[in-house]
Length: 633
Image (tube, rainbow, N blue to C red; front, side, top):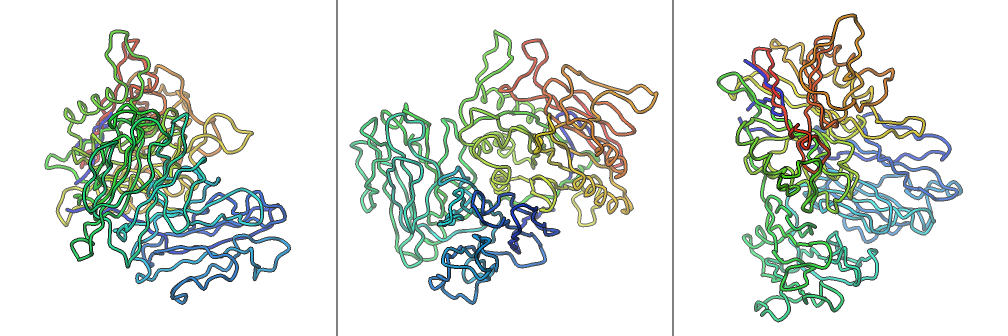
């Protein structure tokens, strides 16, 4: 059997149960602000000091753990002082006994300014497992629609920076029962007792106010079962409730009002009622799986079109649609598994631009990249697709969530399994890598995972390809996905960051387990930024074998004492690595039995060499079931 690696790579296909990691424990650590706080082994440390900017305060950090042998946490809340009387069934909640506002001159028992984090695992309180917790700075930071805000400033009444905690949950939600809107002079726009739909409906408008939608979920109220947008003098539907705030403020363009219907509950109504609302920016936004789009630009100037500011659209989700089941990745009857690697797509949520194209080329930004992707997918018919970083452009993106739906849509529509590693540009816009990962883990056919929470970075994980689709199938090929990070955190280091020793030790440990299998499967490793060893220097007197084009210098971390290549050699199973980052390199060079490969660049919105006669490209790879591997440009 053979493995082909070019822009296409090979994988395996029995129904695949995608790993779902849930948070199962929380610890809060405090320490002297002049010393580093201890880390809990096996826990992820949120890197934000919860007392950031507070004079005379301890440093406080939140850690959480994922353990698939433990029950998940299902709900969170923060209480100030001893004011926990509003928590029903307090005995069902666990209190984290470290004051989030811990100050050096206040006893550990706290005072009326103290903040206490409570969590529960009781499914009578909530059945929705918590998948992520983040902390963001500011009164109204950008945050993904997958998250809920805990409406307590973590530095409330003690100075310091404004910090808020957000968390994400899986599963069907309680129906929405009421919707309203509010106009504000700033983005610091909230309503007590209401959840806000993130994103200003009037974003980009020079003259006007910020407008936000809000909703409630009240178990004793009738659920919302439909939402419509009415323009100008259009006739509203009967039996609907009007949200009496013009969403297109102030006195410009269309008068836009939202109307919604509630229905007395019964099992069918509760199942199909509206559970979530979200806003997407962008004229060509993709409708997420299980959602519906209202096709009226909420910034429209005339009859729902020709907007003043950012093209803005409302989406709603009725009921809860489970993701499609997938078969495990496996070799086909010919012993082949084809992988297509798409590198450096540089998508936006807008129309996008074109760079470095021939003067006679009719290029239409992201649409041209999509057309190229579709031709590749239909020609190669891969079993698996790897998006190897810088999937989203570093600028010109106002909605990274919408850009994520956009870059994956051609693959999702063809029902092809796919996975992602992050590049240095993906999180340079409104969302963090953790938020983007929460978006992707809810998308069809995505096998993207966070990986072990105690490893540096986001998205260190393993996927296995099996010999066939039978119950007796053996693990025949391994794919490692690594976060190659972006830029160094310390000022004394320039260039790019490097893959950390903890990540490499994890690969070595994982490979030692796989190497004990009778099949001893081969492996490939995917990451975005090349490791130092992609330079053509040799540690021996032997010439380096190279195939493909090198049209630019290797942009890697500087050479350092941590050698990824040495770790890959120690692992023993990795026969090929493949990266992106340098868009006009598409070569493979062999070093000490490992092929170090570039994927080229596939996105027309990124720099390239098409204007010099070197077209965009993507590699294909086919790992073989019989420990062979073929790579194609």
